[in-house]
Amino acid sequence: MKYKPTPSVPHHGRPPETQRDRRRVRTLEYPVTPSAVAAEYDDVTRLLADGECNPGALVARSEVDRFESPEDLTTELHNQLPRKAVGEPFQSEGEG
Image 1 (tube, one colour):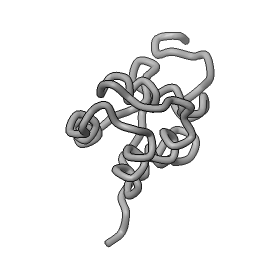
Image 2 (cartoon, one colour):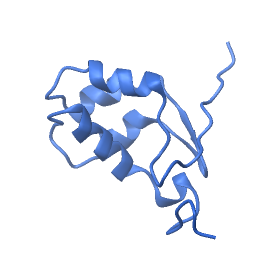
Image 3 (tube, one colour):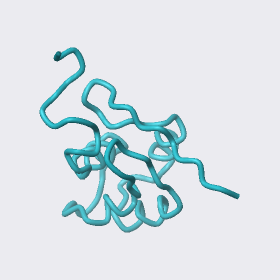
Image 4 (tube, rainbow, N blue to C red):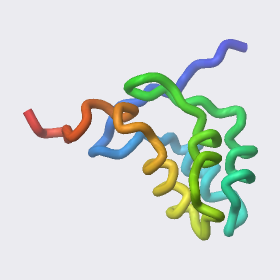
């Protein structure tokens, strides 16, 4: 089966998420360690504005010991994305 990446379009300065991603984050048992998240996301690849990434690999390089909630994990995922991953640096929608 050929992999079809999820298109990534910046949305108000935040990385794109799919409903499946949000559900997956919410179904983890918290607190959760970065290694457990990396294992959960080992089969996921997301297409970004400048390349692609594996969310598990992003979390695995985090310096956080554990995530207390889905919000903590989502914030860390966003923080680990390279700046170029979501479009032009320092630009937001509406600037023109």
